[in-house]
Length: 389
Image (cartoon, rainbow, N blue to C red):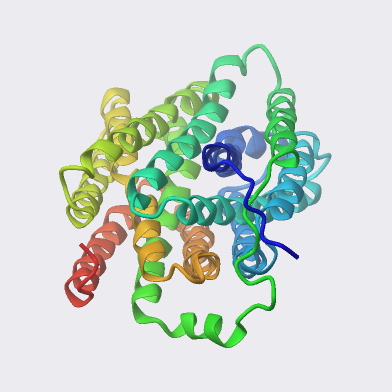
């Protein structure tokens, strides 16, 4: 099989952005509908926490398989099949007649979303030699747009339409990038003559890769916790409606979107290391502000600040990994994403259990503490590895 060379770098970046938009929708959909789901199916917080576990278990499996698949078979088939699966699964979430069908749909939307997330990040990393940090940050903007769009849509229209109808409409929109993927040429696989199994297995023993994975373990857990539980937190502690709580969650995504746009310029003047450390400290401040406040204005400021702080972490960690492991970028991304999604599975579920035992505010103290630990790990890592500037 000949290597495909008649592809457009610009079109591939657009495809990556569309894929990341899909992943943003996948990440935001459960947190946005959680208050309505709790009411519709009459489940408690512990059961609601298990829904995040199911979603993230699917993401974990998708993240594990995508890397070897794209390194061996290329990107096109993966993106097409996973976009189709996201479409079907979101429709399942919208119209599930019971909790079991909801769980199945969440698993498969997570599976496909996890594979798309990894695939689009690896694709953009492959076509962005010399500017990975900036382009991966810009890619992350579209994650924010997708994630912002869901709570914004529900928060604006939930009084007029049911959440089922609105989520069904969101699912139908996935058909647009699916069609685009079908008619686009992609690069040929890196290892179409045979996947280097022994070389890829060695990646699982690479200390820098595993430490980056640990940072993303915490980061993924915190992003899922904040996006997933904030609407419920505001509903409980500020006595505002589910519609308003979902709408206010948009402040978190707005902070993330605009900061990722700004990062492309900031990186021209400041090193990645400083940007990551400042971002982690800002996110610590944001989560503390949310927990210490009893007014809508202060909680919204905390959500905005947390989104600003979270913005740089995933894109810049991906850029480090892309620089360190270019030959097997897909597989390397699979390793760190698998570790990351274990965090996404663990933290929201732990918060749900702790919230039932204590209260939601006490349970969420886990967020600033974990982010401080992440900053310490990153400082140690960048001191030990010379190229990580």
